[in-house]
Image (cartoon, rainbow over all chains, first blue to last red; front, side):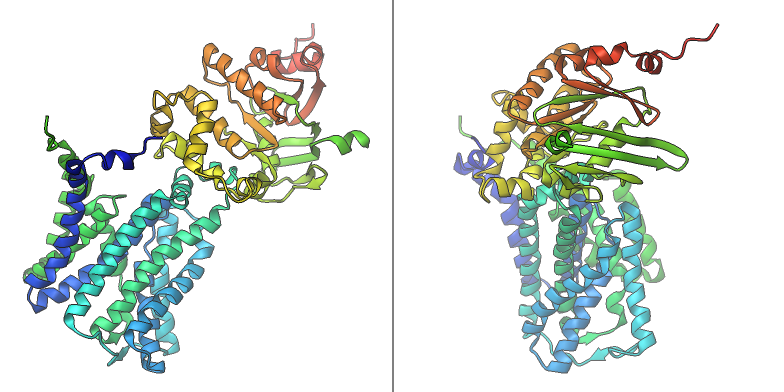
Length: 320
Length: 254
């Protein structure tokens, strides 16, 4: 059987043609910390967190059919667990983050399981509710530092490490999720999105698959949250802020739904843009929305799909 | 009683109402291994509801379904599919974003197939393509690699059947698999079903295309307003007055 892979390996120029965008993305991201000043380096780290959330959002929305506004839930759970482990048990951040990512993802997934029967907008509404819910619980019970939060968490070793670890996480997530959606597991998820009844009559337990998919997205999100709490050395209610649920959607719309790389690019454009617009003061949101609306009207397919189409229109460098 | 013991699938006094509508009313019948049974009846007579009841997509109000003597009523659809009962859908929706052969990856990953293949299948993709080629997707024309959403209706119907075959089922329930197909498309479909029957698969066919159906079936069940009004050989059944009335309407008393 001739596979697409065999075509790709047929010549050096073809390989270069395929690899160029990937190499460009990877090196582009890796060079960024070297050319930015300290303020923008911080923005880069924040953008990385949004990029992680956007990957999770895109994965669930486009490949499983669950529009999940639980970004804030993931960040909050991951961030709080990691911070609390650090403060109460004195574990180093580099141990806290992975533990928090896995346990946070487990908790988020269990919380979301009862809602998995819902589809589309209904799942979105319910998943949007949970972070708000968590905030009220923390305030009402007065636990985990209540409204004050907890400060003086251990920080990551240094600012270079801070930046490169998040970039590495983003790249690892993009490429592994992209691989995942083309594995049999991902094919089944896409089947569930297209026609869940047919999947059920093929002997597949769709709830189990949805649970696993949510776990993947939650794992990526909680990783971002856990990292965030150690980036600022602080945890508080703003970890459950709506931004973490909303901005990933904007990034996905801008970057191109279903491309997985697009949302990353979107996040790395939108986050700095949001920072740059601080000069507008109160008008910031208006300008921000105008840019988004512009994208939705003029480039609804998203940046990534547009660029991909343009790229494939290039003549290939073939010797005749 | 011994006849019942031999039945592969037995539906016993099953009923289902949706609100005030009694969709299926006290229906019993049995499917025997390797037979093709047709289910006919006017629109709204409860045919598809019976399929939904057997495959677990709809819960019965009363009555039971037995597969090889084991009760399947109340099991979720995926468990019933894993026992070996699968179905096609009347309103076909393939996994339209996937290539045709990737559509079969889903059933090939079911616990049933994994188990019967001894946990190892080899390459799922090539298994899928082999199945598709068997049901008339020309490999040379690269049809199996086309996106399912772009395939014409005839292929989609066969793809639907292919999804069932990939599960290696005991029973396939075809819900109006001929509808919307041209005569020539149906004539390519019929050998596929006959081949399945030869391999020992039991087939239940819900159908409106009676002439084509009668070429295939061993017996038919006639439904009307949720009740089974006749069962037997096609020619016998069609001679019955109730059946004529159900299909052609009552003659006005003069």
